[in-house]
Image (cartoon, rainbow, N blue to C red; front, top):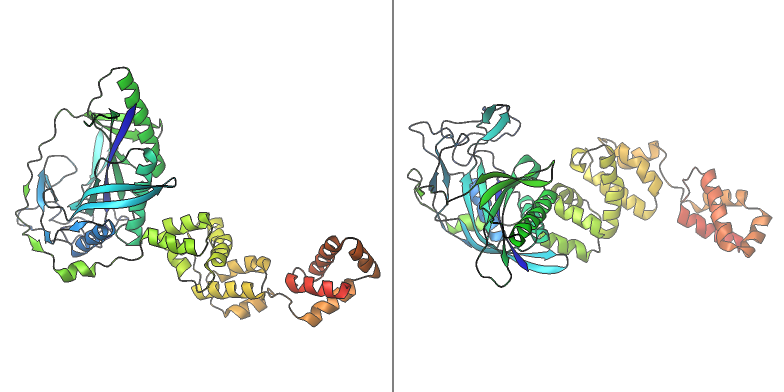
Length: 465
């Protein structure tokens, strides 16, 4: 009966050392109001300077989204008064965005969906507000941090596609080192514009905006809740008011913030303190793309990596960098050892693998030793904690901790001969598999699980026949 129409605006904080228009350093751990310049506060006589790295990051994103890139950089003033805006205006790109007319292809529940992207533009972030009782405290450290706003056309029709779109933008940002894209910290903020209309109707319904949703699961919940709410109102012939809402995590509902009676007139005009800047072809071509998420996913799929491991690697840039730098040819086997031993060890210590001081060569060599049968899976599990902060030669470390498998045929044959009895040969005739398992168990007990299991099996078979 109804068609859902969704447009998404994403604000992405950029990973640059300094702010968008000032030399003030960006430090998220700094004390409040300590990384602020006179330019951020619009002191008389100060002039903004455009952050080159922010422009390069925007060009990278535009390329990843197949956009037309404007080779003339132009900025505008957005004028309004609010406590988080020290200048009384925000420098943005209203009339001449750096990127236009992009698209992103998504696989949503096995179906291919195309999301058209209207524009991306550069702007500066506002100050952070902290509400406490009757007081509002303002931290201007965030004021002036570079942002890219990414605006889709109203072409999304369900919550799953919206979530996949935001997730993919996040993956792109991480893969290109554009942003750390942490929703929970506010470096990726998503606003949802949602309306319903009767199927077949070409007119857009009344739009409700849901602001600053901080997790992907909350995006899905907020959209599904709003769809049900608007359906209920339309079926009851109630009027839907154009408004702004926020998602409340405690109640899992969208809460009204303010009504919107008319479009706000921000009195946009060209920024007088920043002249038009011609972007050279050399600068645009220097913004080279690293491997994109879907390219990485395809590479891992070709290697038959388990889907769970594949998704972890595609969604975690730091983890995939470590994985790709481990020298081991069989990616499928490498992924199993990598996750079952090394990532599992990090998880046990409640850390990300990047926070554990492992030598990548030690990881590569230990995988090779496991593959060659020099060490067993159990021995690798004992070895992994010893590799943290290891300064020793790996083979020396293994020998010192008695972690090598016994793979000498003569030694194993002598051990098996001591264990075997005439009855074992008779029992083997009756039930070969059971008897071999029992003898292998005795050998493992005798060798404290250090016997090479494959070689042990082969030798037992040879001696029983």
